[in-house]
Image (cartoon, rainbow, N blue to C red; front, top):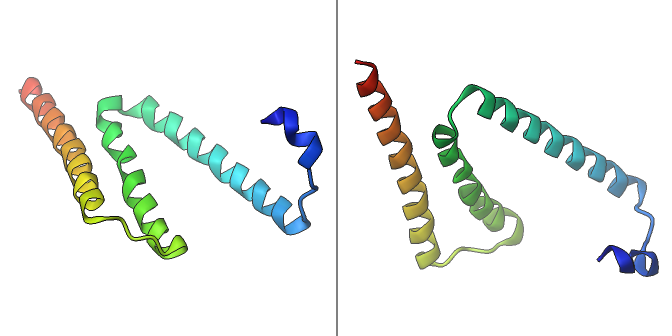
Length: 100
């Protein structure tokens, strides 16, 4: 898509430019925090937190775009989130048993 940018480019307004800078800063901060989290904890323990993205995407969809997920989508989201939480709980339990 970068090849067609010269044909459609418009300079962002000051407000849009500031929003882009803030968005870039938040994204960089999030990635730095994520790498620190992986430095201090096992990936299998941190993976279920990624499922929070599904929940927050649904909440943002409702609040910002007035889009309500279908009942089957809600069931799927719940199954995915609960299975991730169960996997983390089982791994944590196995680690505690291995220590004893």
